[in-house]
Length: 421
Image (cartoon, rainbow, N blue to C red; front, side, top):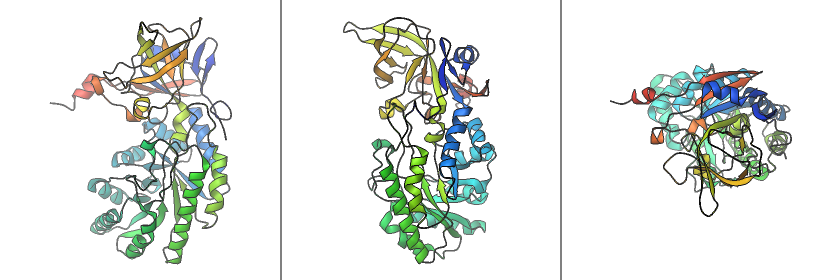
């Protein structure tokens, strides 16, 4: 087990009196890029990816980075350079992966509601595997493949009814969730379609949730997947891989979290029962620590009961996780002021009472125009952004080896209104 301040590389650290990203001054970045801005560390992404890759070095594996965590083009290109493959959850993510340089064969296409247009594109491109969500989707894929004169490589996603012990909104492996088919139905679905023209069963897929912080659900999922694969082998289905999905959590609150080595140690003994290569689809565990949302304080308030508010120029439109999940993110002043620490509610400018990053967070004195960094925001931050209240999407910056580059310019109102008439 690890904590966010132990073995995990932390890119946002003080340099002198101010916070920096890999030694590069955050103040100097936002002086040019403005606020709010996402800042990412290339080094943090490299180290997190390599930690997972090395943990599974003793077993045949392929890492397919889950673009749903963060699909900013420059970051996806960085992962491809590291040797990653891609996990796409939509036709749009397939196209981003292709734009980043991935070949279609290196893309796994997952997603609970694939449209006909998306399936037709995926089959035509020849993506590596389509992780089908149902028997009906398998039949639609077969029809599309035959119409195109192609053979689609597929895997069926199974739902093992395993509680990932994560937030209910990101649990995907329970029988009450919308994902996959019941584990007990999978064998019959494979058997009924084993010889259907247009389909080639390349694997079997499972993914029980996100932000998983204990090993037992992951071990149980691997055991269920391998047991099914062994049954399919007995039935004559020539699988090429098993797909464990993703789900590794990060230490948002500093509590112990699963180390990739512990994860590998829990699932590899199960995998050796089948001996097939394993597909892994990490997202948050690769990019989560790498990013911070830097915002400026635009107002402060103190109510009669003593409650203090620091209002930022970023809100739930830039980082929705706290409003959506009640999630915790560390918050640090970029240049801490001297004085006694006090409890603050750190909030955004959106006209919603849920637009809150933290309540009763103990921080140094805060004033208007101070900068704050909301940490561990590399995953499910910018990718979930919105234009609510007509706020514009922030700029994004990548720091790499002492240099920084704007990898996504700040959105303008003209960009938004160009879609309207």
